[in-house]
Length: 197
Ligand code: GLN
Image 1 (cartoon, rainbow, N blue to C red):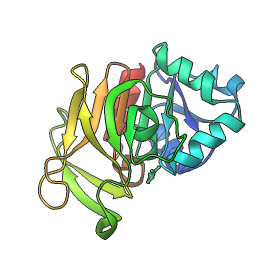
Image 2 (tube, helix red, strand yellow; image 1 turned 135 degrees about the horizontal axis):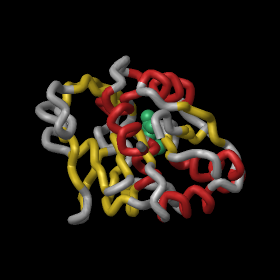
Image 3 (tube, helix red, strand yellow; image 1 turned 45 degrees about the horizontal axis):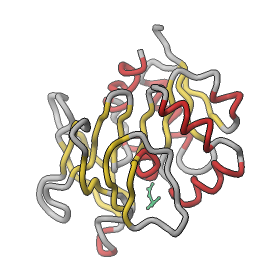
Image 4 (cartoon, rainbow, N blue to C red; image 1 turned 120 degrees about the vertical axis):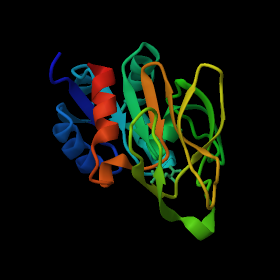
């Protein structure tokens, strides 16, 4: 599989930026809105947006169960921001009735960095990448707690949220609080494309 086909869940959120990054990272990116489209991909990205809305739309488009099942049965999936929330087994600060696809044994707090800092940028070390990433956070969640199978890939250093976990991996699943698709740096997408390969 030299160029895997990777879907971007296109119900809501920043789909186009992810498609562009996937192409840069050597994958074929496609928008996914229907179960038949989901069936044709090797991996998925769940983008940023609004997790409450994404949950509702996934139910309406009859994507919620099919995607939950593919994630549970081992399809490589990458969630960014709201997408991280969607991959969490547990959330704090969710709306009544808000559900996630789940898969990563972690508790994620929505809008965690507080009102003063709706958006901010920070340089973070990511996994074993040799140089830090410039990470953009937009009303971002942080990871409150991880289970023992979950590997921490990045934490914030200094400022608001000092020491908070902002990227994790558990087997075939990876999630970031920040938005690597808008940084102009395709290293996180490359990391994911390599996982799918
Ligand atoms: N605050 C949003 C949510 O709770 C996530 C924000 C984002 O994806 N940029 O879903």
